[in-house]
Length: 202
Image (cartoon, rainbow, N blue to C red; front, side, top):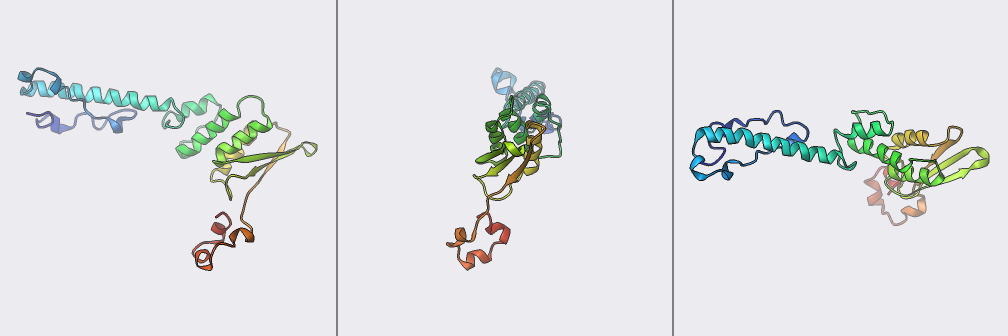
């Protein structure tokens, strides 16, 4: 008799409470690791089934925990990353949004320099950015040159810049859009299927 065919195996023990990373929990087949003469015993199947699910849950928990140690794969562990960098945690935001905020903090850690601001802006823009400083006017401009239009997470970037910049400096954003000459190769048919906002960032 194979594991899972008995009454206990059909019950799906542990499926409803697998813990962190528990959606990935799968039972470990312990029955195949014991002497063959014991595998037909219902008691042994039940015992190995319990221990197999517990081992599977534990392995899934460790796998899930390990993912929280890397920012790119962290999910429920993002709250600890945010706490470490003094960021307010908002579970209503997407994981991508929250990761970008932490990345910006990582890139902007230490003394705030022009390059630090470039790093912060690039993290949010998912592309290249420039910072133009006007020292006599106590302000700077963040110009997006690697992506057209307004970056999706512009609000998060604004918050990150406020947190990173010296308090006495003002700042603004400059976005990149198409001009008419850039659209010379676009046919009327192609243009007709797009909105004006879409054409501005093609």
